[in-house]
Image 1 (cartoon, rainbow, N blue to C red):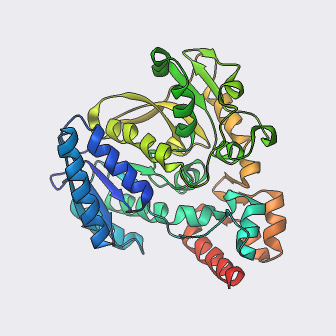
Image 2 (cartoon, rainbow, N blue to C red; image 1 turned 120 degrees about the vertical axis):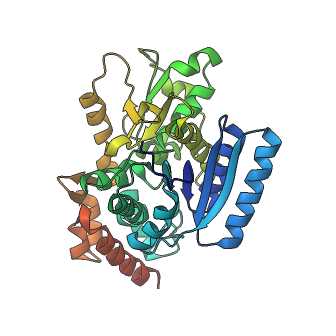
Length: 362
């Protein structure tokens, strides 16, 4: 990490929504070393309350972490750079959404029905937009801090990496499964748990167990693979709206490790721009894969890549490519959008997809 004299915080959280709320609240309870956290966004009143609440939680739990806020205009990479240049964080977390709300769990519009049929990958331009701007701002400023993306990192992080932008890791997604499986293991085994999982498993685990498709989540204790993961978790059916209680909390050990509290084995999606989720060792230098013995990185990558078609999108050689069924559905409304887009054209792709959404929800 660099030693820029202007650095004034350890962790900057961009966004003030529910996901960010849980992250900062748990940072206030979990930090064990003096860390400074900046909550950044546009909603002054919301930021003021989050700062006050987190300071109170830090006092309640006796933790040496401090909180403050900063105005952040996310409408362009240049406006984001204005804020980042004055703060120079060690860790930057993008948790805001560029296109919220866009409802995919109901049938209230043609757009909602399209996304329900096509899959989550259809929205990758939306999910990439603010992370693309933030990473672009970091690159322009020459910041060497860690960038952590919370928005569909299984796919978006590949976009950023192939666009030549900084990306350390995502958070959430796979960590939902490692936390749930770990919670059902004897406490003495949890530290040795390693899991492989993809964003697609969230979609499948929302279904009744008898209706789930595709390869199941894989898990090891030490180097011994568990052959009964489905049996251990078969009673679980994930909710649509309450996953942040686990997912956002999963971010906290990752952020603390990246901010310098010491190395930890954690589970993250999209580390270094890879597809899917993996066990890693995180510390102040970044994240490195921590696979069980006998499983190569190439094998782990290939295993995760098998889920991209079900999610509806893949990123190859700098091009965002929709799965065939997604292309067919999208072509009925926009043959141009169905062609996909270059990873460098996120702004244009998000604008075009937004226009389509507006037409279909009118």
